[in-house]
Amino acid sequence: MTVNKGALAILVHGGTENWSPQRWKSRFDGVCPDRSVLLAPDTSFDPAEVHYAAVWKPRPGELAAFPNLRVIFNLGAGVDALMADRSLPDVPLVRVAVTDLTARMTEYVVLHVLMHHRQELYLRQSQREKRWAPKLQWAAGAISVGVMGLGALGADAAGVLKRLGFRVAGWSRSAKTIDGIDCFHGEPQFDAFLRRTDILVCLLPLTPETRHVLNRALFEKLNRKSPLGAPVLINAGRGALQNEADILQCLDDGTLGAASLDVYATEPLPVDSPFWTHPKVVLTPHNAADTDTDEISKYVAQQITRFEAGGALENVVDRGRGY
Ligand code: NDP
Ligand code: OXD
Image (cartoon, rainbow, N blue to C red; front, side):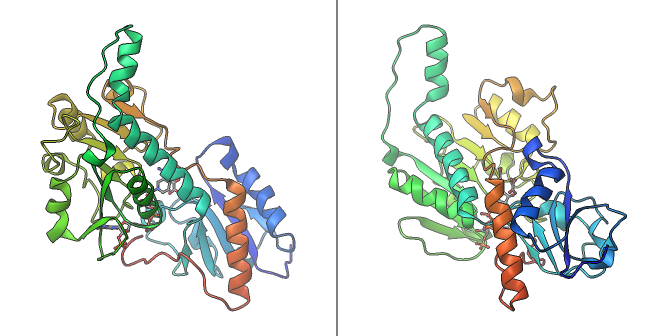
């Protein structure tokens, strides 16, 4: 088949029915009406005609099949799966940063911070036992929330938590100034950030530096005098950020009071994982920010239009940093 404009190839693996390659094709057919959109692999297409790829967890080596690729669009925010592909073509890699995704992640973070702050695990258990036993409820201002990662997601969640009255700190790689948030950065300021934290929210990308950062040594540095009794972990970044054996041991020995987890070392979470039934774990199936797919396809189409008109791409991943 001959095409006038460079074709867009879709390479999507995993995900829900709404994320099926066929659904992505019909969305992109809708927003790129004058461009060929193909589901790779498609032998009726010359791979040389493909200029753009829209991908989610493509298999290592799959993208190297397109010699004239100009831009890779990751259909999510995290690019760790792509960074692991040693044959990834050396073209700009764009990730998703749209308000819909950010708003949904902020909902998740606020929901889980409030759940632990308002002692919901205890209250639901009391309800099941028909036990009228209110406990002292402290104010939001008594709780320090520490957000690891102050990027598109972390900064927004931190701002909303601040407006709810929590004391909020954030930790990032580079120095930041955000109104109302105590900003820490880099290794030298990490321990001070952890020491004041009662609820730790992790919204870091997975990179060689951050792999297994959520481990016992870190949990032991969190505020031991927390009004919550023991500090709480909320991880919606990536599963490989956490040492899962350490989380379980720390929940059992009281180093951690509870954990909300959206991401896991192995996904889907295996049925025999102790997380499923642990009384101190609130788990969700990697859906903290299940973004509106129409927003994503529009975002990609707009970027292609701007790029072909000579404009700059937005949210290009820094390959050196890995995010
Ligand atoms: P950004 O790239 O906008 O922000 C990343 C933040 O992490 C930045 O503040 C960055 O610091 C900081 N950071 C990175 N490496 C380090 C490090 N070594 N030490 C300290 N800070 C570091 O990403 P987003 O906010 O858009 O997304 C974050 C992650 O959330 C994604 O990579 C993805 O894994 C996950 N995610 C999960 C979803 C879910 O449904 N569970 C949905 C969407 C995303 P600096 O600002 O200095 O660069
Ligand atoms: C993402 C995700 O990275 O959903 O966008 O995990």
